[in-house]
Length: 302
Ligand SMILES: [Zn+2]
Image (cartoon, rainbow, N blue to C red; front, side, top):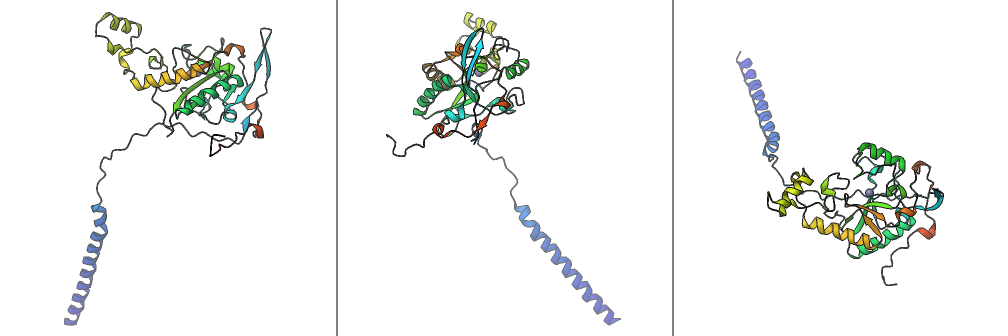
C-alpha cells in the first residue's frame, strides 16, 4: 500500500507540474497578444486625386482621312490619335471605361482622336501650360454620333449633352474635355468634378453670399437658381485656375461654353463633319518612325 501511495504521489506531482507548466506556457504565449495596443484612430492623409495612369499603347489608331460630303459641300475629315501626335498630354478617356455618369463604357475602344487641325491648336496650348509646369489631362475628345445618342438618352438635357440630332462638336472631333495637373501629378482645383451636371460647373456660377440676405440682388439670384444655397461658394483658387486654363485655351483658338468649365471647342469647328466612326473598325498599328517623338536632348537648347 505504501509503495502504491508513493507511486500515486509521484504521478500526482508529475501531472501537477505538467499542468502548471502548461498554464505558464499558455500565459507566455498569450502575453504578447494581450500586450498589443488596441487599434487607435490614425489620421490618414486624404488622398490627392490623381488621374488614372495613362496607358502607353504600343498600338496607335489610324482612322482613314478624307473628305465627307455635307449638304453637297466636301468637308475635311482627318482624325488622328492624340496619344501618338501629342504624347506630352495625359489621356484618360472617361467614356472608354465605367468611371462616367452612365456607370458603364460607352466607347467600344479606348481611342482619343481629334481632327489634326484641332490637335495642332492643342499642341500650342500644351506648350504654354508646360512652361508653367502644368499638363493637360484629356477626358474626352472625338465622340461618335452613336455614343452621343447613348449619352443624350442617359442625360437628355442639352445644357450638358448636345442632342445628337444637332450634333456636338465632340462628334466633329474638334472638342475636348480637359483639366490640368501639376508636375507632381495632382489635378488642379477647379470649380467642380468633370461631368457635374449642375450650376457648380457653370463658368458664371454666381456667389450669392456676397449679397446681403433679402437684398434685391440676393433674391434675384435665388429666383434664377432656386437650389443655389445648397452648393458651397466657389473658392478663389478654383476660379483662378479656371480662368488660367480658359485664357490659354482661348489664346490657342478654342471657344468655351457657359455650362461646362472643362469643355473647349476649336473655333473652326463648323469646317468639320459630324461622323459616326465605328471604333472597332479603326485600323491599329505601330507608329511610323517619323511620328515617334525624338527624345529630349539633355543639354537642351539645340
Ligand atoms: Zn465636352
